Image 1: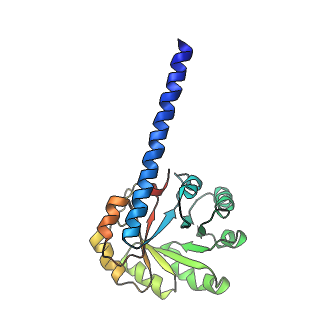
Image 2 (image 1 turned 180 degrees about the vertical axis):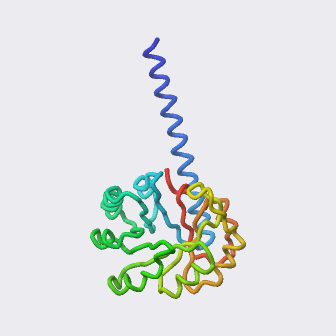
Image 3 (image 1 turned 30 degrees about the horizontal axis):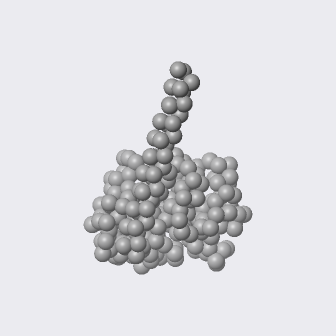
Length: 212
């Protein structure tokens, strides 16, 4: 009957979504284990195409989250929800919002890395991180007194499809020359994280692999 077919379809869809959820959880767990083997910290990096709130709630241990959102209202709404979770929250590029919600600090794009000393003076307790996409950017981040730098893209990534990846070997050589902790970002998953064993990376930052 039509009612039976509709019920069967609902059961089938529920099973499919359950399988997807299980696969997502397995992906997150594999990446967490890979980070543990590296003795590295795992960072959740948000973007506009994923549900960062769901991903943050799925994290099993307190972590660092970097909130990136282009829309001001969406960024503020997410910050209000994320700040209530047992994670340390950095706001990307929006110092006013970070201060308003009592975030743990600020993440700056590479072109604004020189602002780090200014925000350090205004908020001495903040964690201040920057992005870098080249060796020059990486070294400059150290001179500006950032606490850590996110080097990307280490691997090819869907979030920046036109950008050439640095590759594991080149990125590792760059990280070894830095004077501050370096986190690998871009295309990070459990399999690729294994390529970063025995490197100077202090942590791994992921977008797709940590989102449901």
